[in-house]
Image (cartoon, rainbow over all chains, first blue to last red; front, side, top):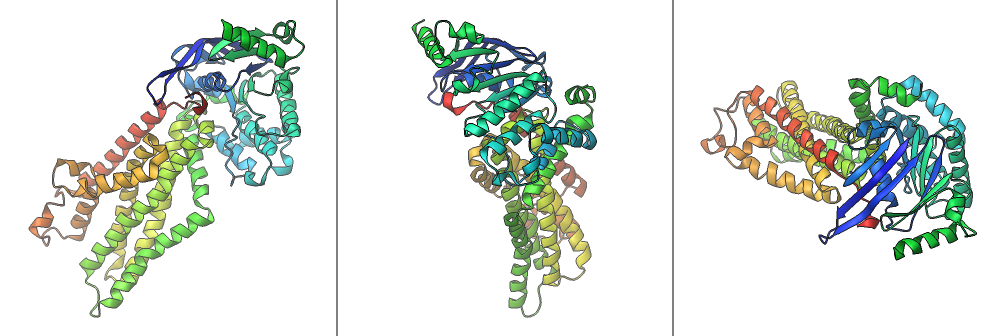
Length: 245
Length: 271
């Protein structure tokens, strides 16, 4: 459902030098699978996710969502993708219902199916208590739930989340991750980047660790853990091996 | 069949272009109905009338019709429209580009062009409504004889002014989103009020030349105009000016949409 092959993304920085933000990363996420994309600041996680979201064009390599290449068929890729960012980007003055309605119409959904879809999301994401309140008065956790609802309004089979729990407290983060469990159970492919390793250690089916734009480890939890007791230890070990090579 | 499949199967003009554009337009119009923007609209409506009232009171023998029309033209299709578009068009696009909301629109099919065109339409509707109300009030306050035909002329000039200049302001908004307002003011001054008054080929690409020429044509002023002022208008028929404004707006919008299509949004942490 989500596939990245030998992805390379270079930028030209303001001083003229070339920044190799992503350098040959490959990964895949199947339907019904949740994959954790791990790495430090500047590792290339957000760049990888933004290429998948068609916000950036790859320098070389390919990326596709739902079988649609992000360069050859960006509209197709966008139709199959839901995107959630750390900064929710939820307009303060609008209510969750108004936001979902606007974004549903951006996808060309008609009134009747859109209303049905919104009702379904209100129920499944627990938005009923604040659906008609301006989002500026809501908590970070409630705003992130609305952001997730906005990403799901067109019922995409793939979901990309860029550090979605960053601004959330422990309770908000747990609630959001529970929702993601449900979405995975529905058969959606989920690619999730985060710094909070403990939150996803026993939640993701597989992990991809990148550092300096390069892939340094990839596998299931037992494969990543190896001799280490926790994902955090394994993560730092993988970074050390990556840096040495 | 999921909603995604249904949309895929029905990728008509309505679902792919019209519906997203109207969604952004109603979203932006909703934002323009905030208390601050409505207060601004009220000021825009009252300002020309206040100026005309002050002028009328200082002229004991009554305001000359041609002078009154010239003043209302300068105040409404020029000043109110320019200021209205400066507070609606460029900050709206730039806000979306610079804040998190833009990303969530850009990841939708046709989201980028819907953002630009929808915002453009909202700016045109909001500014035209304010400016037409301002024109009506100013004409009534100035007690211009035969007000109805004049209001009709001013309304057409207002709509042409907003259509052309909103498209002009779309360019700085997409090229320099962080400095959109400053860049738009510079564009207004340099393009509309400097190049527009240079009697050469360059002024053909400005909205101000077209509006002035239409005003002169429709008010029947061509014969009365002093020779030195003749250089500041284009004697072509009215339809040419109207087509030119629509053509200019279309070209500017297409260029702005193309720039948005090619624009990339790198995460700042990696730069």
